[in-house]
Image (cartoon, rainbow, N blue to C red):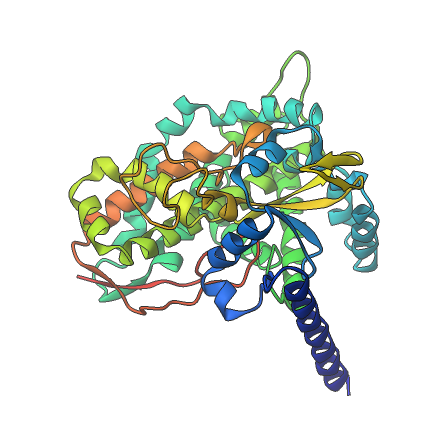
Amino acid sequence: MKSFFSKFKNLLLIGAYKTLVIFEKLTNKGIALDFISKDYIDNPYKTYNSMRSHKPILFSQTTRLHWVTKMEFAQEMLRDKRFSVDDRKYPIAEKRRKEFKKAGREIMLEQFENPSMLKLDPPDHSRIRKLVQYGFTNRYITSLEPEIKKIVEDCLDKVHNQDSFDLIEDLAKPLPAIVIAKMMGLPNEDLDQFQAWSEDLLVGVGGIGTSKEDIKKSGDAYEALIRYFEEIILSRKNSPGDDFIGKLIQAEESGDKLNIKEMYGTCLLLLIAGHETTTRLIGNGIFTLFNHLDQMNQLQNHFELIPNAIEEMLRYEPPVHATVRFAENEMIYDGKTYKRGTPFAVSIAGANRDPEANENPNEFDITREDIKHISFGYGPHMCIGASLARIESKIAFECLFERFKNLELEEKNPVWGRNLIFRGFDNLKLKAS
């Protein structure tokens, strides 16, 4: 009986969703953000381009968000103090608090009330970022190159004699997880558990049609990671060490230090941001090259083009597709009035394909000059780990091309993940020779 009612409820939800799609098309000249359709999942850029041409800021009935697909507006919202990331200030916060309380997620509620810098506006964001950036100096990140190369080589050694391997499972996923774990100084024996929690956590972030089971799994992993970081940080208070967690404990600026909950939030943020972005950058980049074999051949023979190719990969097929901002106060923007707390989805993927920002934006070109993208954010919330993701990806591509002279896609049309926020593959099988 429970199964029957569950299926009936799902049918009602799907029916309501389809009705919203029809209504959205009627009000927007045939344009709708139908995020569960195969066409959208396979190629969301067609939808974003249509949205931008019709209205650069378009209200989507299906997501209840105002989608921003124009680069100029996207950059302004990411840097302008009139737009906030702190959802605790707005009506949506009460819904989140009720959900946490109903689910018995006291730890998640506590972290919601004490967010990481990702969810803070200046001056709180500026204070924490200034303290955290001590662990992300260019000198320190550059010093990690030999260790990163060893991790990549170790991953590839495991599949070297195989006829095929899964790029995501065998390299793109473990690489950033191992790197961030080593940066934090986590024990080697904890790496498998750490990676398992990381993967479980991400199934509940931005998923399309995420099941209750996945939401529970994600919440369990979130709370397990917070408890894990709590134990690690408290045990090292008197002897911090020289790794990233040690730097967080010791970080000080004009007498200011991170409090314990800020440290938990920072560790969790770096885990999610550092893990997911690099994994999908590597997977999306290789897939895009397979669809442009002339450019792959060019890259294999000219490694010096890899850094610019990575910027084009980030622009053309970004790992993160959207981020949310709220109207700080009632405001007039682009000739329209918005209430305080109005949520905007800043479409990173849409802005990157804006023809006013990049000429011929729907063409992939690893030699493109003056590449404009916001795939690592823009303004005060620019990704603090961007240089690390670039180095990890650069070394991954170099080692892949050195090790395997002839790579082929095992499946010509691999399945894209169903996620509004992160775009990428769960699996990407390659034939090796």
